[in-house]
Image (cartoon, rainbow, N blue to C red):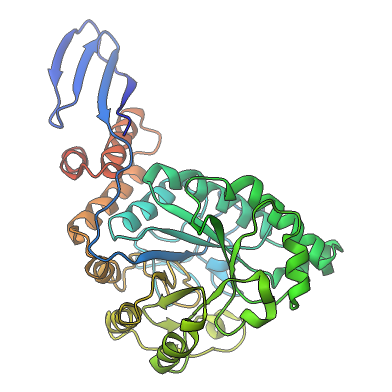
Length: 418
């Protein structure tokens, strides 16, 4: 483990002063005229200890935009659908296309502070990494924004010591063909070439048996084994491809297993997959989710799909326990932030931190809601003091302490700020 020393220079409005002191978090502060040098002993990101050895990943949607990040200066369609307007504020809350409201308020998926906040919450919940829903590289609809946001997320992941992977939406290939006139397999080849260049070689990318993990939400766009073989033909290392449950036959030998998704009927469907299908697969992912309540009909995006009651944290706990009793080696939490379908586990005004607390208990970390609340407070201070160099620097130090699991030092800084 390499020990690093971070040196930060802060310009102050202090004139003619010169002294040395120790700050409450035991960092060394040397004050000279107009300048303070803060030296922090940092060990970098440290792994969270879990009593549950299962690898736990969370499905992540990188498709949210605010007027500051959208090319047209408007709220992104995943906050608005057809008829919601986040500029309308009632009782302090913006009108969004969801029955549920993020504690941060609606956000941009490229916002660095949001990303750091989310990744810290994952880390302190015992989540090992993110599986990002990805629509490829082509200039069609909002796919370039999703690609940009995914790049932004991946740039922040190594700082926390977490891992990342991709869930490929091959349904988008039909749109690429219709709008950009690119052949389906050719478009997929271009997407996978980008993944190999940008992500697959990263030490932070999830690998199974030395193969980069690639989930596929389908297949829906490429529906023959030959299509998938051709799409992978230009790659130096073939990904470990997992399509949806019971869809492995469509991809043929290109795939190495399957993963489950939200089941609209009951838990029997999950149980049947675990007991009857999973034993025949070389790699498979269990799934756990808190419930399901989509906003599609009131939002103008069609009819309601189905409803799964949350029962507090009951549904999440039940699906987690099923994954554990099935001895699943890998688990995907569904999802971090799909507000349109109501499967989000990140903190909301409606459920607070309860979903993450249930996950903390499941993964067997020593952390509790106390650390989650501290991370949320860190984010609110980041938002409050944006542009304030002195406070931003202190909050960066707190972030570095959090990723290195030095919670007491981080708390000293965070709780010392208003």
